[in-house]
Image 1 (cartoon, rainbow, N blue to C red):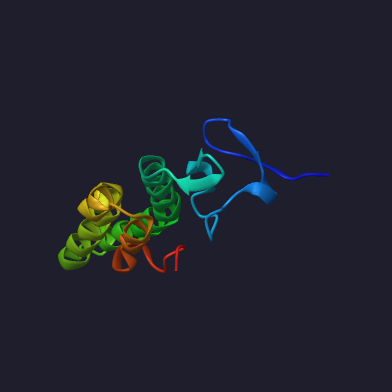
Image 2: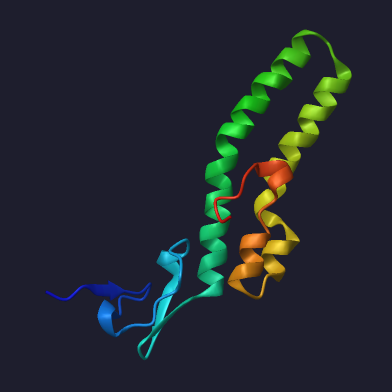
Length: 122
């Protein structure tokens, strides 16, 4: 029984006949050209930004707690730091390194570990 692979546009190829990317991080952005499967960079950027949003959700929730504690303690410097951290998290999907990436490797390198933590693409 043959194993088939479907690309993002619904094109199907036998896996044994295909040249496949070495990793599956952007599997939903695969596109088929002849017998070669590549990652569509535009679709990969959408997947990358969605991953950022997934990772930042619990970070924003935790930062909300930190901000509320700073608010209760009337700690102006802690509030300012928390606001800056939340802004960085909100701005992460719009990073210029993402939009300017012209290869999958550069896109993976655009993960901001200082804001988001360890990269899932390492």
